[in-house]
Image (cartoon, rainbow, N blue to C red; front, side, top):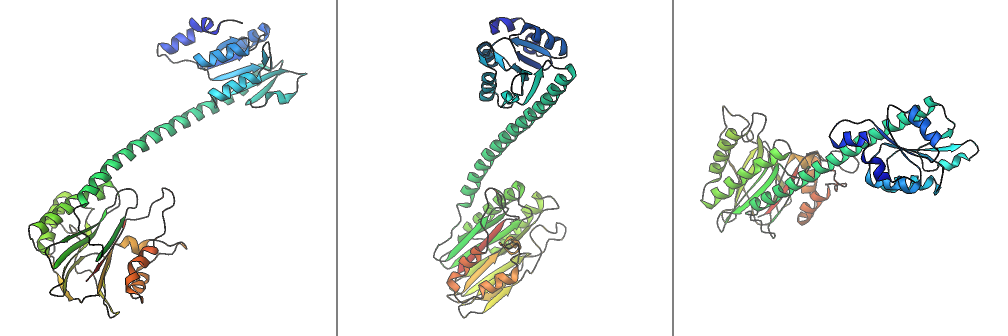
Length: 392
């Protein structure tokens, strides 16, 4: 039994590989019959052939060297060739193995090997089997490499998204949402949402909030929500009026966004002392006021979205509506309208309107949320979804 390390030390194929040169496919032949080994070398001159004569040496070879295919005899001095197959499967599961055996041996002796050839064999038959298995092995290695690269890319993306999510959460943590009076949600289609909900207490009686949907639902859309959050909260702290908030946002977005992007939004200010609700709706679905009496007021869009027209920006006219204690105000993005239920039917605006008109006003928000199907594994929604309820 030759020492495999000594046998390989000066091999030209190994030296070529170490020097960075391209190498031919390397085949490990495990057979103690010198005549068979010599025949295989003559038959397979297009490959780099390594010959060892027993299971022990074959295993040491596999521990220290690489090869592309193993050609192993069933009967070896220290056991059956299945021992080599087992070693291959435990270390290199995809490495192809061809079992050789004499005509008098049962063909089931090649169990767990990829193929079988009977000795004596014809050169063409052996080459055909080797080339087929080598081609399949190369494809498996390429697929495995691609899977590794994809996993690395996904891990890198997950790390970046996690950092981005932390930044977004800290930015939006300035929001003021009294849980006794305000309920809201934002669900991202993927990981980061282009939808947003802002809210702040301007003074003791006035509460201002905004719900919006930036074009798309990708990282670029989510990035736009950050300066909008800063403008919204800074303006409120400085005592700015709602129309001023929109004017600043219009200028900022018109400068920042490419022509294909804009921001659909609703901005509201509730004055509980005066009993009024100021509403600007720019391209969003109707805002709904569910009055304590059971009646529902719809407030449709009255102007274009923010940054929709860069050359002739519209004014931001507010509409005032009377409200009373017990009234509930609902606004949502089109993602809630367009989502599909378990029967694959689009929910639609009329269905949402029916929910808001329902008997028990205190359960409306929960019933709207119940229309949203749960996520399945990592599959997201087709669009971002946002919803807010404000109790007068």
